[in-house]
Image (tube, rainbow, N blue to C red; front, side):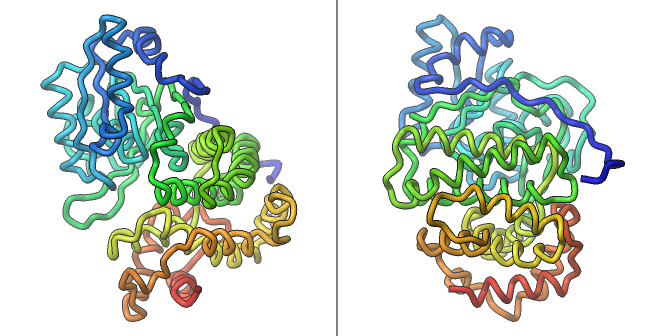
Length: 382
């Protein structure tokens, strides 16, 4: 880091960590002044029983609690507006985002609309909100997005499906509850893809041009936790200790992003999701090894990649990009061609990637032609 570099840190949520932590929700919500909490979640999480467990805890505490269970994957502006309408109808005074990143993004987006009105596209960017938000408690049931520790809601436009980052300090969860028992219900593929996403967060935040001493600590510690546990997740052999390490790694990655940013792997992944429906974790995992190779020509990034490689489990590859490629193979991720990605679309995707918000934080500046090369490499990889 340059001696003259300037940075400003952001606050983090209060972290409540440990098996059975979800049972503390009534106490935690009460401390925030909540009397009519609303759980924002999806149908799959309801079927797994987690919201029911939370509602039972609230009932035992004499607190009425409502459930909004219509969260969609990659929520759109309309999805968030529907949640807002439900929250208004129930008179909610505290939101609980219970689920994966989509549940937390929907809950945070709902807070924007409740406080500021308008549509989510009106809140694109950071720091435009001026009014106070209702308190948010984030309870992740996956170990990947790190949304529980970020003040951004990522929402897709209704018309173009372009992902928008809408951020404000008020959107940060007051409390994040990390209960590894909740991750047991994850389908194996979801556990793998969210884990790979968390690793991408750690790797990209570690080298982005907004990195600083605090974010670097979070990035490195997140990678250490994740690298030591993701192999067991991929193999289907994760113990509760592995699950806890993955949750902590995902949360620390989220804190690293909150205090820095991401880079070209996420910028290039978003068009794959928007155009072809490639699941985000798969898209970013496919793009990340090539981005690491591209960034190695930046001396600072190369040094950090070598530091990360030293945190890999014993017997792993010496180079970070080779280890990442090994994870993709071990996870059995589909090739991009399986989603219908075509060479003739690469130029258009590269143009879209170059305009993504995260692209400008990559340690090496990229032109459209650079993204073309990254897509060609990813399309050709096995």
